[in-house]
Length: 531
Image 1 (cartoon, rainbow, N blue to C red):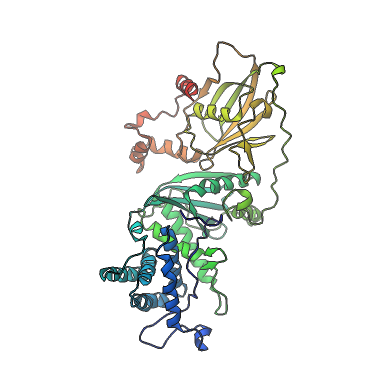
Image 2: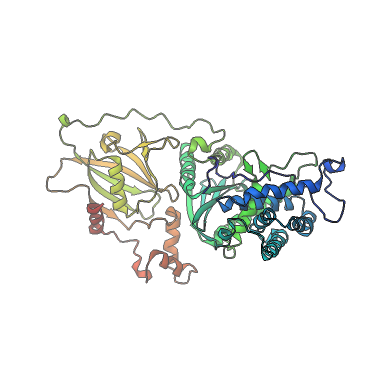
C-alpha cells in the first residue's frame, strides 16, 4: 500500500475543485457560483485543468488512490441533488470523454469504479464512456486491471460500548493482493448516524483497535465485540449512512459557505467521498439482513453520558495508539503504576512454584484453568502458557494489566512495556494478588489471574503444568464472549440459517463434535509441553 500520514482515513487526491461547477457542452452556461456570475473562471479551462490533473493519477501504485479521486467527483455530483447528478452524467462525463486522452480515460475509470446504486447515473455514464474510449485504443491507467479483479470481503466486526452510546463497524476488503479496512464510527445519541469513516491499511487495523480498547479501559468504558456476517454488517452500515444522509440534508451550508468539509477537509477526502467508496463496497456484499435484536436508529442513552461519548469518539482521530488517536482527550485516569520490584537474585535461592487460577471474564458457565508455574517465569512465557492452556492460536496482540504497569509487546503509543524481562513474582509478589491478561484486542478475551498459593518446586515435575480446569475454551476469532455465546446457540440449532456455515468455519462435519462443556486436561498439558 502507498505510504501516507498516520491519520488513517485521509488519502491524497487530485486538486480539489468546487462541487458547484458544471460544464454543459454546446451552451454558454456554467454554474451559478459567484465566480461564474461575475465573469470569473472559464469553465472550459477548469475542465481542462481537471483532466490534466488526472495525468499523474494514471501511474499511482495503489488503486485506492484512484478510487478516492473518483469518489470525490461522484460525491460532488451528489452535493446539490438530482439536477447536479443529471448534469454530471449528461454533460460533465461526455465533456471529459470528448478530450480523448489517456488522462481523460483515467478520470472516467476512477469515477466509474466507485459508488453504489444511489450514484449509478454518474458511475454508469463514466463506465460507458470508459468502454468507448478503450474501444478507440486509448491506453488505460496502470491500475485498471487491478480494479477489474474481484473484491473479496471479511471478516466483519462490530464494537460497542456498554452504555450503547457509540459503536464502531469494521469491514476488511481484499483485491489484487492488497488489503484494506473501513472503520465506521456510529453515534447512537445522534439517531445512529455514521459520524466518521476511516480507511486503513491492513497493518494499521490492529493498532487502531488496540487503541480503542486501551483508551476505553483508561476511561472506565467497557467495549464488547461481535463478529458479523456480511449481510448484518451491510445492514448496520446502511442504517448509519442513511441516518447521516438525513442529518446532512437538514444541515445544508449556505451559498457563501466555503467548500463543504463533507467533501474535503484539511487532511484529504471528507466524509462524503468515503461514504461513496463505502456504498460501493457494500454493493459487493450479499443483501442486507437485520441482526436479531437490532433497532434501526434512535436515541438510546441519556445525555448525561455525553462526556463518555466524546472521549470514546475522540479515540479514533489518528492511528498508532491512544496518544495519536486522541484529539483532545483529558489525561488518562489510570493511577501512576507502582515501582516494579527487583528481580530475584541467585542468592535468594530457587523461585517457588505459583499456583495461579486463570479465569475467562464474562464466561457463563465459568471457563478457567489452574496452572503451576515457576515464580520467576517471565510474563512473555506466561503468555505462551495461557495460550496453550486455552488453545488460543497466538496471532494477536496481548497485554498484562498489573499494579506495576502494562506489559506486552513494547509499544510506546499504547503505553506497553516489554513483557520479556518481567517475571510473575515481580508483578504478583504475594498470595491473593490479582492482575488482568487480555488477548486479542479485537475479540477482547480478558482473563483474571489470581495467585492462589505458592509451594516449593518438585524436581520430578516439568513446569508449567495444568492441574485443573473447567469447560472448553472458545475458538479463536469467534467474536469475544458475546460471539461465543451466539456460536453455541447457532450450533445447537440445526435450523439456524448460519448453522452449516459455522460448522464449516470450525472444520467440523457434525455438531456433536462441538463440545463446549468438555475440559481435556491431557490435551492442555500436551500443548504446554510443546509450546
